[in-house]
Image 1: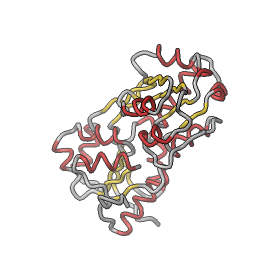
Image 2: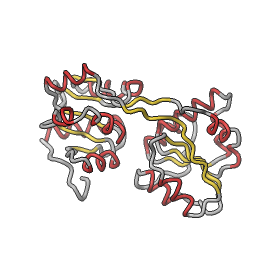
Image 3: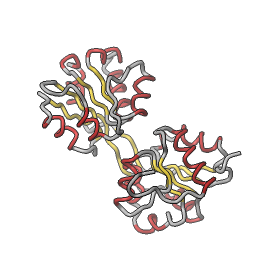
Amino acid sequence: MTALVGKRIIVTRADEQADGLCRALERAGAFVIRCPTIRIAPPTSNEALDEALGRLGEYRWLVFTSSNGVRAVLSRMADLGLSPNTLDSARVAAVGASTARVLEGNGIRAGFVPRLERSRALAESLVPVQGEDILLARTDIADPAVADILRRRGAARVDDIVAYRTVLLLPPPGALEELRRGVDGITFTSPSTLRGFLKGGPEVRGLLEGVIVASLGPATTELARGVGIAVDVEADQRSVNGLVDALDQAFASGTAAVDEESGE
């Protein structure tokens, strides 16, 4: 029996991607409340992406800063009749383990994964970059510094292309009602899920008092701290199971907020 039995847990992940986390929490005995605060949408135009995908052989690196970027590019390639094997012509870089796993699930090996799972860390440590052509496939709200860093490091060309959009959503009324009734924990799987949640304003933010806040990764934890929200637990592994395990341990031990300096 886990410490999650009977706990009321909010899941803020995009509805179309929340099933895995919801099922894992339910298997652990939790009562799950879906509260999607983002939606993944196509770009307003596929023109730039289609052009880049038509000349993949020109790039030394295809850089993915999220698993959603992988899904978006592979989906568009399927629409264009391009096989994932086409990516063999370019080396693929992934921001972290979860993104690499999505690639591997589609038969693509990540040739580079940074030690620190941050998009800026990827841009700062990717090699070789000097004189190379790079395709960066990202969301519309991604950090613009990634492309700038690659250019400053001497990349001959960086095609910085929006492969998908992240649409922030207000917490839905049903989930808000559950929050008002009281919940035990809430999960934020990306900075965007937190930003969408906070669109609900001061009342929604206030509903987090006394609630265990769980983060899937350092970027989300950093944003939470920046807006004054204490993260009680951060998953050791950036995966659904890692997040569920972290929550279980938090409830079992009465974990305090993540330390400001060490992140542990």
